[in-house]
Image (cartoon, rainbow, N blue to C red; front, side, top):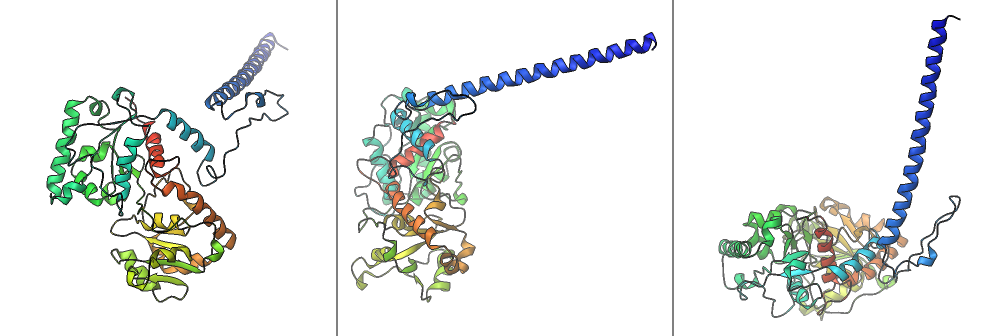
Length: 422
């Protein structure tokens, strides 16, 4: 072997040794990184749970061949179930919200125009009035704006409309009011309104605020009509449940065996989908479909009692995508069948609607009966039980109580505030 070849061979060996050494170092670094990440993740997980939910004595580091177990307090089945997308996350975040969430309500404005709460918390737009009343009764309100996570603009247009104010003039009134808040306080300007919200269930409120672009684009809108043709932005805005209260009869229970009618709907034909629903199914023998609301002359509370006897209650959109029948159906223990296109359902990012309702597109109306008949009995029972569990989320109370409609709206606001930085 020549000296030159020997020299080349020695060089190749040195390179191979260096590569091996480098690979070994990288493997060692990877292992150390994995161990560090695992340790830090464990510490983070442990510290993120409130002490009331984790027993420190139940957490231990064990050899890699055995499982590490974290014992979390069992939740009351009446409070937490698979009704939610992530039950444990909902439980933990909800309790953090109750402890920490603060809302500042702007004190300015003509009380005859803004702030007002309807004299009677009744009717299909009562959700707006309940929220206005509940927010003042709750622990979330703060008098110190520097402590606030969000700012409530108390816009309510009922009284303006009742006085005969035109939509154009209502828009001017709302715009002037918000401009006054911007000039008097520094809070809008630091986020361009991203940490502000207003609540309106009445279509008048939607119309009156549509003409104020910076309010629509920037502030969080909590509205009963979350359709995209009125500029609803799902990741920013919140769908407010439209609830007719007080309910005429008590809540329905786990009584699916007493429900003999396959599906029920009675109402006015004030939308295309309702016209089609009535035309296709009003003479069917298994679906109870009426193209007009049931006349009171037929008997006392006949309409409400029909909910008790039906397995599924059809909820087609009206002049907007929303319908008060959804909350009615849930209250009376009847599985709601959502029949609206592009409806961002209330609490959709919290509740798994497929666990307690049937969600269809409007084009499915022609196959409605077969779709409902094809649902297995065990699925029907599961949906019905979950409807009963969901009832508390579609009920307003005064003062508000845990997990009711008010607190679910507040939870949605709590989720939104995390993405706002200033």
